[in-house]
Length: 265
Image (tube, rainbow, N blue to C red; front, top):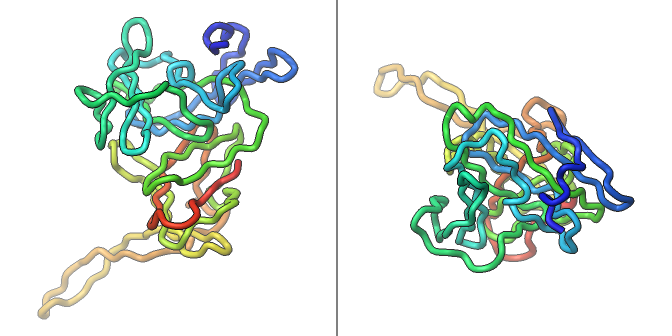
């Protein structure tokens, strides 16, 4: 049963998370994701309503409210991408390609459009003025435990629950290796706003780079240079980022050999 066929029974969220009980084992949920970015990583903490698998199609998932025609969403499949563009009558799947997030004039990816719970998609909103509008996502809450696995060198991972979780409180059932990174993305397609590097697997600890300036003498002349220092992330500090429902990030594996890191939500 497609979500859109029964969405009228669900509550509409003005902020945060809204729930609506439809039957004893079905809880519909609509989440408001706030982002000032035109290009945003959106998590999939919800599944298809009435589905038998813990998946959902982004077309049924990302509401078109507040989006301009020409906006698009895509998800990474190995080295390739699946994409959808917003037309006047709704989302339309289009050819998606290898090695580039640009979904125009690229190679089509085989298979359906469903994405696993706990994965993430890029939402690229057309129109800079629209970047301040909330994003709405919807689906059914999954009652089973969800584990995300960093399957490749770069993996898009999304908060697979409807609870906010701090970076230092992520439940690693298989810990990251020293040198692995968690990367929070900024407005550009490849930019990084916050990057944390694993400095220990047991316990899992993270460092982040702090920049500063320093005055030095070079051949008798004073010069101001930029300094870079690795600082340990302190739990519950202002730098301990919170991964909210509907938010995602990239996980970078320094080496793809051995057991892949896993998070249980």
